[in-house]
Each structure stands twice: as C-alpha cells, then as structure tokens.
Image 1 (cartoon, rainbow, N blue to C red):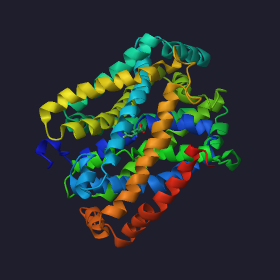
Image 2: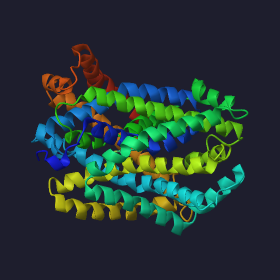
Image 3: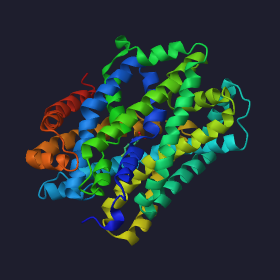
Image 4: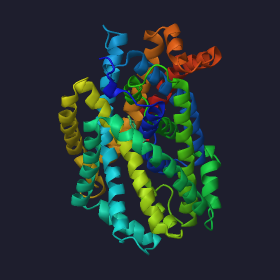
Length: 449
Ligand code: PFF
C-alpha cells in the first residue's frame, strides 16, 4: 500500500501529537501510580525510568523507522522487509495485544465517564475521602453501569477511527495536551502542600531497594513499554503515515520526554495526597479514582477543576484507545476507505464483548479468579508483562537482523541530520542490550527467578 493523501498527517505536529496521544494515557496517569504504589515507590520509579531510556526509547525509534521506511501497516511492513519469512507475525501479535488491551482499557475509560457524569450532576459535592471511596466502589461494582460506560468509551473510539484517525486527533490534541499539563501542575502544587505530604514525596523519590523483586523489575519493564505504546507495532502504523522529511529521533525524544514528565506529575499529584490523607498506596487500580476527588475538593472551585481534569483525562485515554483500534483496522482494510467504517464497528463491538468479563471484575465476577487473578488483572498481566515485552523482543531482533545498518542510518538521518555517534549508540542498544535485557527480565514470567 502506498500512502495516499488521506492517510498522511497534515503536519509534523500532527504526527507527534497523535503518537504522543497514543503514548500518554491511562498508563502514565492511572496505571503508573498504582503499580508504583504496589511495588514500593521510588525503586520502581527509578527502574521504570532506566527501562524507558534504555529500552523504550530505542524501541520507539526502531518502530518509527520500520513504519516510515515501508509506509505499510503493522503486518505488511514486516512482510515488505522480509517477504518469505514469518516476521509479519510480530504485527499479528501486536493486533492481538491491542485487541485484548482495548478490552480492559475501555473499562477504566468507562470509570472516567462515570466520574464525569457524577461530578457534572453534583453527586460528588462535599463528600469526605471515605465517602468518595464508597461511592466509587458501589458504582464500579454495578454491572449495568460498568457495561454501559465501557460501551460508551468504545463507541467514542469507533466513531473516530471509522472517520480516519488523523482528522479526529490532530486538531483536538493541540489544545487538550497543553491543558492537561497545566491542570496537572496545579494538582501537584495542591497535593504537595497538604499536611503530611512529605512522606509521599519520599515514597516516590527515595528508592528503597530492599523492596525490589524480579516481579517488580518485570512490571517496571512492562510499564515502560505500556506507557510508550511500544512492542505492538502501533508506532509502526502511525509513522507509516509520516512524510519523509520529518525527524524521527526528535519525535521520539519529545514523546519520551513528555511521557516522563506526565508520569512524574502523576506521581507527585497522587502520592503526597495518599500519605497526607492516610490512604493505602497499594490500593490497586482504584487508587487514582479514590485520591483525586479529595485533592480537588480541597482546591477553590475544586469541582470545576475536577470536571476539567476528567475531560482531559478522558481525552488522553481516548487518543490511546484510537491507536489500538487503528492498528487492527488499518491491517484489515489497507487502503479501502469504505471498509474502514464497517470494520471499525465490527472490531470495536467484538472488543466490547470480549471485555465484558473485565468490566465485571470489580463486581459480579470479583470472586472469579484464574491463575490467582481476576479476569481484568489477567488480561492486563498478559498484555503488559507478556505480549508487549515479547513484541518488543522480536522487534529488537528483527530490525538489526533484517534491515541493513546503512538503510537504518539513512532512514533515521532523514529530516534530522542524526549524528553517527548517536546512531551507533542506538544501534548498540537495539542490537545487544534490548534483546538480552528483555529476555532475561521476561524469564520471571516462566518463574525462573
Ligand atoms: N500508551 C498507552 C497508555 O499509556 O495509556 C497505552 C497503549 C496504547 C499501549 C496503545 C499500547 C498501545 F498500542
């Protein structure tokens, strides 16, 4: 498939915003605080940063170069480079991962919608911290409500992807992303000035390595891939819509930078408040939803800010969700614009159906566990700690093996003037460090450690 006008980003900023939109989402804002909370805070954070720089960033660049080099979708790009081999299974693996991912991602997207509805209709005014926890717990355990909001989130995703993701994302992101940053800074200021906030800051920023286990390391790696959307070929797909004169390294650096800033802001917004309010940092997926309303309620015009925050948060989650559905639809439809609409609906609804047990994991199916995990947790574990690292491992093997070094250098240099030394550093990381490190860390899944 060659790139038609329809499928190109209209500006360089458009691509960065869409790729950053895919990266920045629930991973940084919702998932990072609760996983860090469960894994002892500072040490997890430090390892997460290391993995992001040593593995996430090089992999992001690797995916970008495959996408722009081939200008093909997630499956055909591998096929174009290695026609006779089975490497295109990396793309198929990515599609499967995104299918499962969206099925539980939409559950959390639904929770944002619930809170938004409750905040707008005044149901959250003047509650105490315990009451917020109670209201939230009651709501997400209601099967009908959870399913309705999950469906709503998926419908929003379908509508945008059916129209073509570029039109949907570019304009809105230009306003929403900066606004999200600003609100976060406000939130951090409030949180760190609460009485007793210091304990939360130390929790996040002072590593306690005695808490470190092989599981923590695996989760930190999974989290770094999750927040950057790497390993599932979403970034291959997005960069295939990119004209040749744009700088891939600059895009990758800015995405990683923005992502790390948002992760830090999310941590600084949540943990000081968790400790100041005497809440439990290891509370799990509900952490953010229990903490935030209390912090906002302590700000002047708190509910208004909370509503604004939820809208931006929902937007951040949606721009990530678009990329998950987009990769699947773009593989199936290729260039066929009419097919895009039909397939967006078919795949979207299939994802909703597959996601029903995840949505019910906080209520009706709360006691049903497989391998010691609820359905929701099992799906999350499978994607974050198995499929994404596996995809990343295969990409790290594929790129240096199947694409000539000189071709990679040319691709990364185009539009960026990348220095040879930096390229060599990247090549070393992707060729040697990434495969070995990912493989070793993943052995935890098999119980080797
Ligand atoms: N990076 C997204 C987030 O942090 O919320 C999640 C994600 C989106 C992962 C798209 C993978 C993906 F393909």
